[in-house]
Length: 177
Image (cartoon, rainbow, N blue to C red; front, top):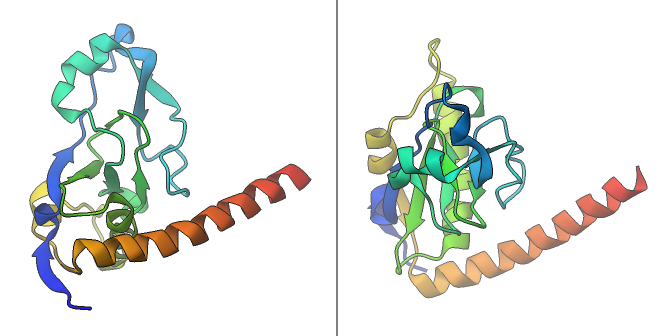
């Protein structure tokens, strides 16, 4: 398997989230998921978010709407490096940089790759006494290695199968409690 050195920006479009004005109540409590670091980021798929946007709220941040299967990476604070994949059109706040993978990248593979990158970024951020932050430029230019698309699909298939079993066990355990 040959790995190619690339930058995260080579994977696809990088989108930094935005927050509609919180002073305008009509921006919130709609049907559009609004992902923030306070949501449960411990699963592969983006959770049911605690906050949602209305169409009015979406209009304020229209360029930040992510399609399903986008990869969201928390890039500030103690949650730096946490990763989730959207399962429906979603908006994130500015604490996330997200990747909309292009046709040369498998979204599931990108998710798993970003979980590794996220751990690296989190570790590197611990060397600073300030609030850790990875801006869009630093995130986009971060160098990684990736295999060809067919290998990505094979790796993602194996890891997704394991994740599905872990999630099933988690649900079974939750039902026992």
